[in-house]
Length: 411
Ligand code: NIG
Ligand code: FE
Figure 1 (cartoon, rainbow, N blue to C red):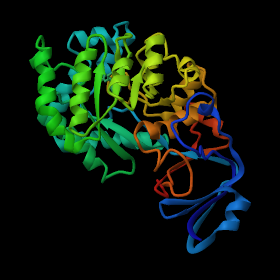
Figure 2: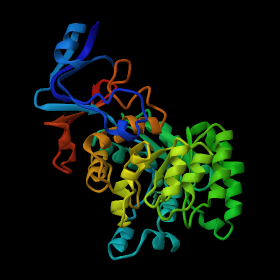
Figure 3: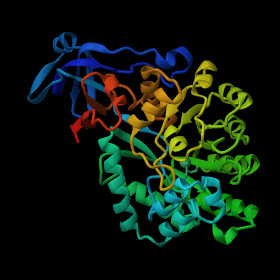
Figure 4: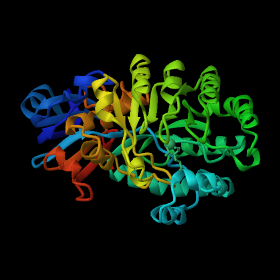
């Protein structure tokens, strides 16, 4: 078989091959291939294994690129399944208030937080939104993210919500990261509906969902104390599903507030945050086959004082995935390696468990496990080249990433 790209003699090749999502003991059951190689035909992987095995199976096309991977490791491109990367404005004044002791909930209750970004996003043109988001996507790509979810949720009116989703579609044609669009009209109550939460939920169901559905693959709700109730969240996610958007949910970030049970009831693919999830919530996720997507960078930057109980989730056979939660509030880090490092050092995962959580399990969280999330023949070649052993990814800020491949192309 003639190939266009061969990377060979890698110190470590982590293929993360096999079905996802992985739970329990399978969450960490991966091992690197020594003297590894990957061969591709254009964007598609055609062979992986040791250099000798791959060399025996392929021929090089005349213009093939051959990369000497000695001194380097290769892992699948990171899939970041929870971002609010599309937004306008700046909340660094809020950051300084939080550093002075104010909490995320206090700032939100006083009209800051998400609502401050809503004001800026409504006022921004599509070009401004796209330009500001492009800068952040480039930061994510440099950190190894090759596929990412992108939410609406800073419009909170039908026109701006749809506009945000159109910007996501446009960004899919202008930069390398593949973006998966999620509608989250129920991210906050907009100021014009203050005190009329039921009316806003009706607007989301009756007007926003039909308008957003052609532009979004997923429907999400911020189900938490001070935001949307389990009953409201269920009604919204069921309406979204009827319109063709698959459900996912923000759950138990600020309080154990029924989100995992909603996730199980509506058969959500993923419940996200789960910092405060309790034993009943974990059991609901397990019984409902819901992926637990954890966002330790948000817990860290919001100073929540605790992280999601990842070990309990793994012990309960709930598949664990990781995301950055890039957003203008507590989502200060565009880095999946930072999420992996916090998963290891704050949530007690092994490196292998965290790598699975950032690749095949996140791909499954976005329903992309047949295309990305592992390095296997037939899948797209999205990969991260690391200086030295792959565990160097844990050396936050030491610039361990040597290169990022998207669809077979070095970005
Ligand atoms: O996932 N929790 C809700 N949404 C975001 C925060 C968005 C914002 O603060 O702008 C999150 O943390
Ligand atoms: Fe979020």
